[in-house]
Length: 353
Image (cartoon, rainbow, N blue to C red; front, side):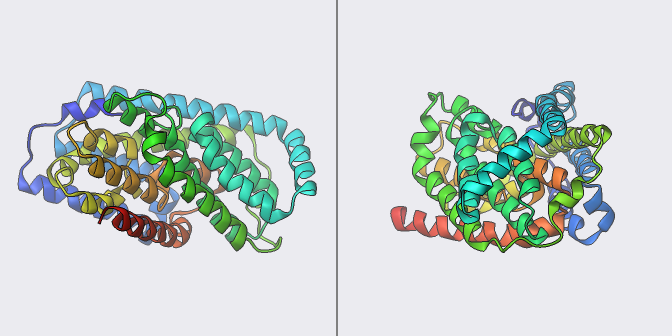
């Protein structure tokens, strides 16, 4: 997703930077205060992305092609998995029920969250998110706790997927930018990411309640083939919107973010909660950065990406499939993300302060 950055003009006027900051505020606030925006988040983000690109003067054939082309692979994966789950749901239900009968629920939830977090670096974050959605349907817990379990698992998947270049676009881009081998990011981040993934699994196992009413399974009643196709189309629009937003807001990154010291980079990259983290990584990461700066950028991007729905691909897939709204996601995702940010920052300062 980084090729669009080349289309940016060398500098913008002050009013353009001001307009872009206003747009960032709109993306952060409006989904929580206007119900239409929350229920039509894909269309809203696509509009905001187009406005951002217009303000930045970044429209180019390459960018349009990228916005049309890049979501195709993700969309096809979502569609294929949706069809597989649609037709094979009975078989999957029986296999999962057999597993539930053998394992205590707390152990099962820990294995789901931590296991998908680790496996996402091998099977990709997309497949991990789709498996998560199906498991959530089968658990039949209280709806609010299922939302919380989904969000915790998406944090774990977003963290774990970075460990290899095949896990997610961010890891692919960073490995290429640093001219590293397959295990580069595992060596850089494994000691930070794996404890976080395991910790999220333990928290998920600890907070779940007994089975109750109002399960997220309810949203799947009467699901039809058109529903499967519409969900995949929404994912396409979501990813296309994030590409445009990333390109349009890149001047803010280039002017105000990349030159900051490591400690500030860690917190400033909370902007990943609303922007595609692969585009941000492409704009910020490079061989000229110090090791501390790169670590701060990557950890900030990975942790904060789980806070809001647009923050990463697993969030988008899970929220779309399970019909989790922006407010419901933020109500739990923001406190969890801030808690993780504080914990990681404290550990960072202890080791590097």
